[in-house]
Structure formats: structure tokens, C-alpha cells
Image 1: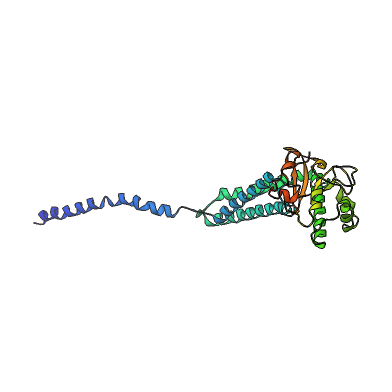
Image 2: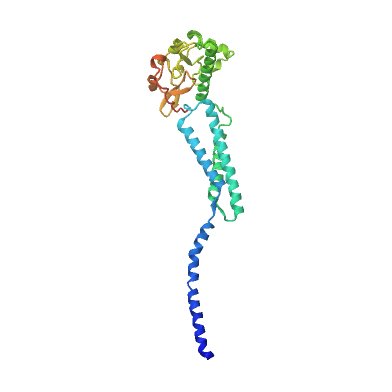
Amino acid sequence: MNDEANPEQTEPTEQSERTKQPEPEAQPAQAEPAEESRKPKMSKPAVLSIVCLVAAFAVFVLYLKSGEAVIPLQLEKLIIPADIAILAIAFISAIVALVQIKAAAGALAGRRLALLGIIVPIVVAVAYIRSSSGTAEQSQVTPTSQCRSNISRLAEVIGEYRRDNNGRLPAAGKWCDIVLERLGGDESLFACPLAAGALCGYALNKYAAEAGTDLPENMVLLFESAPGWNQVGGPELFAAQHRSRRGSVGIIVFGNGKARFISEEGLDGLNWKGVQDSESEEPEGEESQDE
């Protein structure tokens, strides 16, 4: 009797073993979400470092494309320091990212991005040092930038005179004398470094002198000209002494104080006569580069 009962008892055990066999096959499907949850996350400092690198590159490209003719002098002085500050943020963020990634022991990703954030600022710094080492003994101010600074300063003094005299410009035949007096006798601002021996290389727009207090912002005020003291005239006196990729250009300052590099072909599109041409738009500046 006992022997006959034993086969009956073994059959359920065999069936139970068979039913248990598929269970291991379902384990890999359940393990996939767990593997995905263990995927390392991207390091935020590493991402910030790359964003800063892209921003620094975009600012530098914009600076090169626009040229110094478009950017006001005060803003132009801030662009390079701002770019350096952005690269410094990228460098520091990259270092922080590497430290975090190492401490996370595989829980954070972005090591390559962090290395890029370290290498690029170093390469830029080395390139800047090498490019500036050859001109360390030379003046940092080019003749073109000095010329632009001179005529812009003269325009500022004329603007100060207008504010003190109910909007009137200095007398046409004495504008250099009046500006020179306000400058304390400093004649160096009247000559462009490229015009050797010239006492004054700028002229006052004759139509601006006749405009009185009604001076449109886009009207030509001062421009580079043939040498002459207290010189007043129009486009016929314009002198293009600076070289650019578009040819020779000269500097013109408008009623709003902005300076632009203009070629001789672009003179006709300027607002020389004031109210009559008040609908004329101030042109975009042209790039200029000393050679």
C-alpha cells in the first residue's frame, strides 16, 4: 500500500517543478528597467562648461563679423574681458564636473565634456599669450583706433558745447579754435596718426553748421578730410585713409556721436544736408583693418 501511494505523491512534485521552470526566463525582462535606472546622469557643471564655451565662441564671432566700425568704443572695451570671464566660468565648471564625476563612481557622466571645457580655455590662453608676446614692446593702440578715438572725442566736445549753448554748434570758421580751447590746448586730437604733418585731419559738415539747433541724429557732423584748420565742407573734402577688405574707408561721426567707417562709394547714401534728407538712414559700419 505504501509503495502504491508513493508514485501518486511524486507526480505533483514533478508538475510543480515544471511550473517553476519558466520563472527564471521572466527575470531578464524585469531587469531591463533596473538597468535603465542605473544609467549615469549627465553632470550639470559639465553641461554648463560647454554652454559657456559656445557662448564665448558666439560672442567672439559676432565681434569679428561686426568689426570695430559697428561697435561703440565703450562696448568694444567690454567684449574681450567678457569673453575671458565666460571662458573662466567654463574652465572652473569643468574642474568641478571632473571632481563630481570621480566622486560619483560611475553615477555621473560627462567626463569628455569636462575635459573639453578645460582644454579649450587653456588653448585660447596660450594662443593669446603667443600672439601678444610679439607686440609687447609696441603700442597697443593702432593708428586706425587712435584716429577713431580722436574724432570721437572731438565730437564729444562739440556735443558739450551744444549743451552749454542751447543746441548751437561752434562757429563754422572757428570750430577748431573753440574745441581746442575746451581741450586745454591739446592739439594732438586734431590729427589722425596716418596723416603725417597735418595740424588737423578732420572737417565739420557745412550743412550741419547751418542747421543750427535742428541737427538730426543721423546727419553727418565730422569726417576725415584733407588737412586744414577750421575746415568746413562736404563730401568733396572726404579722405579715405584706412584699409579694409572692402577697400579704402574713412571715419565719419554722426549727430548722435556714433563713428562709422565709410567708403567713398557710400557717401551718397549719407544724410549730409539735414532736414532735407532726414529720411536717410544711418548706414551700417564697414570693417576696417590696418595693414
